[in-house]
Length: 70
Image (cartoon, rainbow, N blue to C red; front, side, top):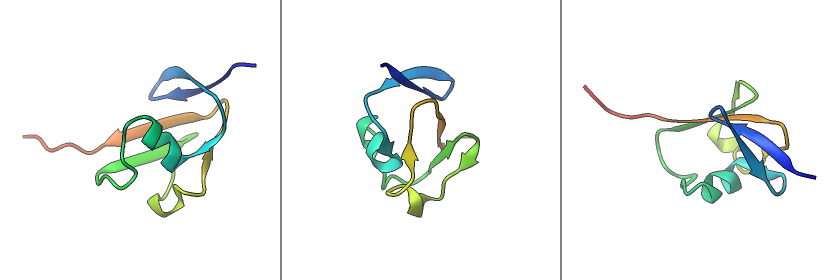
């Protein structure tokens, strides 16, 4: 059975349930990088919970990076 999540509005297959930290690493993003926010199903997840909170099939995930500009 194919499992998917929605990541920043795009459907993405996932092989298994994983923590936010694992998922970020899989996406090439260091979980320690500053300026990153993660929401699952419209709820912002506190950075201290990234090692515990799991991303599951059918979740809607938003990853936002703060950028400087002017």
